[in-house]
Amino acid sequence: MMSPAPLKQSALRLDVQGLEQKVGSRVLLAGGMGFSIPAGAFVGLLGPSGSGKSTLLKACCGLQKPTKGKVLLNGEDFYKNPGPWRSQLGYVPQDDIIHQELTVEKAVDYAARLRLPVDLSPERRKALVSRVIAEVGLQERLKVRIRKLSGGQRKRASVAVELLSRPGLLFLDEPTSGQDPKLEEDMMRLFRGLSREGATVVVTTHAMASIELLDTVLLLQGGWLVYMGPPQDLLEFFDSRSYEGIFRILAKDNPVQWAQRFRSSKYASHLRGY
Ligand SMILES: Nc1ncnc2c1ncn2[C@@H]1O[C@H](COP(=O)(O)OP(=O)(O)OP(=O)(O)O)[C@@H](O)[C@H]1O
Ligand SMILES: [Mg+2]
Image (cartoon, rainbow, N blue to C red; front, top):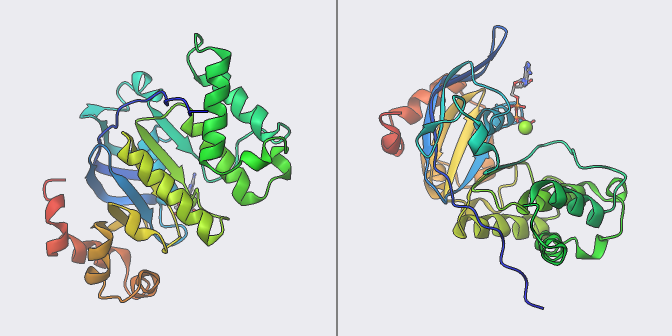
């Protein structure tokens, strides 16, 4: 059987300007962060644990209004009028939210009933549910309850739900955590594929093996943006032979120093004006 054409949306451009996020006096995102992600890019958000990756994702997807600064979608101020954008955004949080007692098939079908157009025929809905479950490689686990899945499989079930509505801008917070190396690469290839089919995809990850599949890497340290650019230049900027080595090099200096060093380097020329 031919798989049905997905319900497609168009990729969104994301601009962040002068962003700062504080909780009380604690600064979670600093330095008036600014950058631009073109429509259809596949972007990775990297950084040590606690560096602000989830905080930045939440600010960009409308869950946590920044203390200062703006998030623009296709050039429009998202927080000024978030309503019309909501249906075009997808977000897979770091922690599971999917209903634990439902089977994989029921959980995805339930989400499809809630999210997909009401006039969609049951046959087409069923076909789309099967399609996204196959895309994340869970077709063998259809009748298994979510709570009985492995951590990695649960994560993939959450991703399947977001794939239903084919969002124009998709944020995934550590979708590959708990996956074995092959699945991790498969998932990163799936996300890259989505970006080539008309979605902007932003993914946080600690996995370095698939980093070269990304168009752009954003690296955070202590709430500061310390690198943004292609993965290949990342090695050059940090003078490191491996991507893993960058984390050791990062720890040698404080975030402000790295942020300033990056800002004044040739690798930041595309950020001038942000
Ligand atoms: N609501 C909050 N109130 C106070 N501090 C917070 C809050 N949310 C996050 N933080 C702090 O902000 C920092 C960044 O957290 P964040 O969850 O964004 O990190 P992360 O880069 O996603 O880390 P990980 O790789 O472990 O997921 C951490 O020090 C965290 O303790
Ligand atoms: Mg996080």
